[in-house]
Image (tube, rainbow, N blue to C red; front, side, top):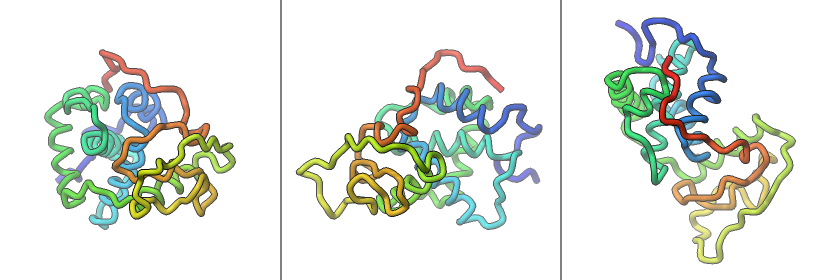
Length: 194
């Protein structure tokens, strides 16, 4: 039996190109979606110790986790057929992968704000440990302090910038540091298919 997320042939595209030239360029996801996708991928491994992320399965795991995170978090997202085209796989396969990933994470898509913030801070620390801060996002006076994430002010305890002290499930601007304010995602009607 072929393990979940393994393609019949090794992908001909690097993970970096897959993320930059396909997912980032065509999926139109929020910054939060990428962080949630990382958490979902980590949960797959945590909940299924026999599952190993490899160069054979990482592409399908990425597109599936991005699709699930976008559907869960973003107000506007595409249908499965679109994500399949972006990911270079068939619609039937992306539907199957979606159900497989949901099963592997026990259908648990909600992420606690403190868990989200830990992953976000860790990711920013690894991506741009010396990125200058632009603390232009501040919590509103009406936000509940009970929902505040683990980072306070503009710095996480790890030294990375905080996202305006808003919980994971609240929409927020995407200008917390130069690393996050990269080129805007461009939508296209006909993405390249793998």
